[in-house]
Image (tube, rainbow, N blue to C red):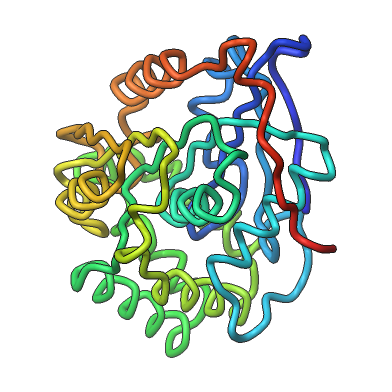
Length: 275
């Protein structure tokens, strides 16, 4: 998988991994990179079958597979301990990673995530899936911002959205890849396993998120042994983009609070996935 590392390059620097949502590409985190790079060794990556990470996503693909792929990448880079921040699908990757490799994560931040798919989220995903299958890639990409951003932000950023539309159509991950990744996401249900995830986890939600109702995050945090829920009032599903001035300080404060002490860099034995 494609990845890049930036930020602090000292032996005692904590590693922070950023994992994107359904789009899968690292560019989503641009509003946070400069801030986070001042404090952490930051790794961003394109998930398998997206962006610069070329490849075919097979039928029957699971969120567990996405977690194993990230664990394999971290193993290749000799990263034995890290923080992970994930948006939606990326956060659910983090939950599966924390469950499957409990000594790997120092902390986890899940942005607009869930334990079990909500009816509203399912409805939105089915609409987007139908658009892709029946109207094609351009219609899917054109509609995507409606599920991500608040109406006033959409109105004020039309030129940017037009540029993004052209870019996303030109670099689309492929219909089968997207559908298989979406099916994996919709099929994930961690309700009965939340008690096994002991990683300190911040679950961030937004009141005006159309795609993932805020109560999904509250329920997720309540089911985690070391879960904490915080909520923003504005920004939609992608509030890290639309209101980064509010989002960034919340994220940074929580990460710095959970930064590694020197002894935390010594992990217990990790069982890595086979190649």
